[in-house]
Image (cartoon, rainbow, N blue to C red; front, side, top):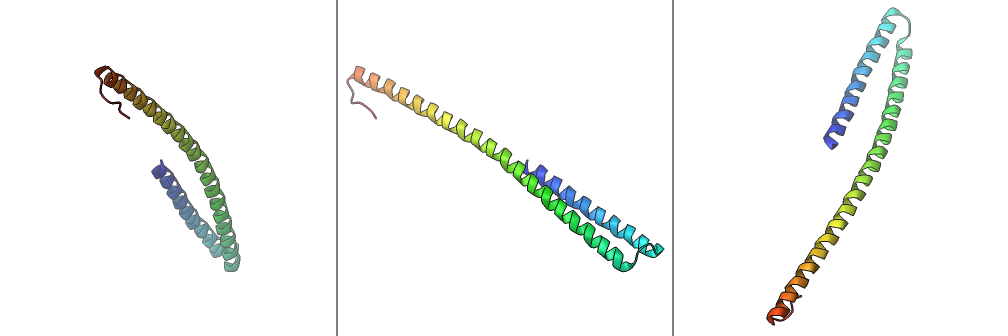
Length: 113
């Protein structure tokens, strides 16, 4: 599961790199056409990059919260199942000890713990 999440995040980063390249290409074309100045293009690129980082951080935070919530649920279920299994093992050990003690009593042997 962690591998899937890692690959998804890496795909997102790859998409961001491609998008950055496309933004730079488009802005470069606008500069060549004289639609914007180099300074304006740099400013736009900076704003776009900042917005992209903010969006990435927001999405990463949401993903982290969602994963933690889901994993906490899984951990809680696993803990309850472990406790139930431990209780069953203890009950079986007690039952086995009781049978062994009854057999020992029937044979006149000392009691076992």
